[in-house]
Length: 165
Ligand SMILES: [Zn+2]
Image 1 (cartoon, rainbow, N blue to C red):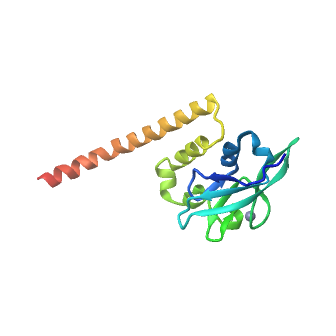
Image 2: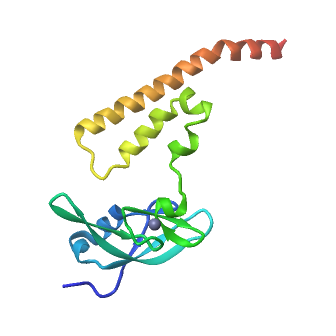
């Protein structure tokens, strides 16, 4: 049996919606869906669009994914843009790595590690080993911050001492 009225899904993330958000809202009826109405908070203006879902063969089974409103290809993530919703290639949406990897701060301030940590924590399900890995990365970032602060402390003390005299 198919569901008649499109399911309403509000994305918990700014500017995009993931198929995992739809799966979480739909629960056991997920595989019966033919379309969903998604609401997204975006930087320009909020978007509320009905999106068709499509099946994509994968391994022995099939995945239910969004059909990109622009190119009609199966996509797991759609991005809010001026023209409504579209996939990454259609919107030219760039990842944080693509935007920031050429900057000096990308390597200097553990941004690579921070990006890896956030992507790890964004996974649908985390096993105990992944959580342990996430904890170690968070600790490493905090240690790096502590080391940088310790390196800056003599300069901070010198400047403070000069301004007090
Ligand atoms: Zn597309």
